Image 1 (cartoon, rainbow, N blue to C red):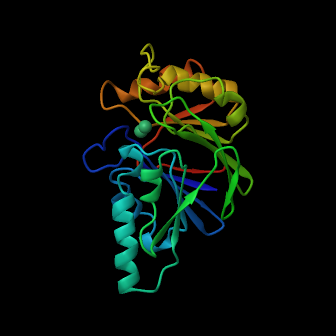
Image 2: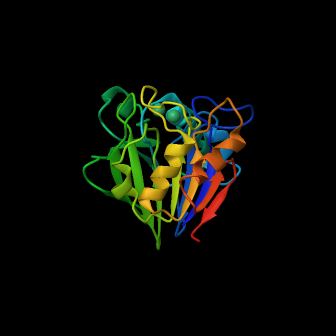
Length: 245
Ligand SMILES: [Zn+2]
Ligand SMILES: [Zn+2]
């Protein structure tokens, strides 16, 4: 499995960059996990809009769904100027019916419900869900494809429920929207230190810190996480690639 970070910023995109978006590729299948602000522009550095096979959304905050509309228009325009495209499935939960319905657009994209109690198959991927601690219903994902497992916290404050859910994953995309010593419970986010604890207790192979803050010194996040987790820790950035290690 190949994972490419398309966007790694929390809340809003840094100049010329994007908020949450991760391209997962396996066996010729292209899955986009979250589609935040700037993602549609950035993802085209790696794959054509018409080559996306599926999209899955963790929750309906703007920094994870802002570019769904442009993606839908992109599929429309491409289908009028090139080959006819298959309807693109966009998977989302149904605890916000208004937002869920927006995932469908004419014959170009189709809202596909995931029931978080049930793992789903999307192409070559098996995806399981765990509710996070966030302001709106949000789901962490455990994504298995080929011989590898990728864990993704989406947005959440710290919870021990992550430990068994992520257990033994090869790599963990963990939000670290805050620095060590801050309190993320009220804002629904984690610190670098908590990301390290999640990685350690879940015994993952690698920790990728993402959903990054727009304040402070980002370089501090890695050593703060490393105090808790002694495996490899890296800061996400656009274009960062993880391939099963
Ligand atoms: Zn977010
Ligand atoms: Zn959020």
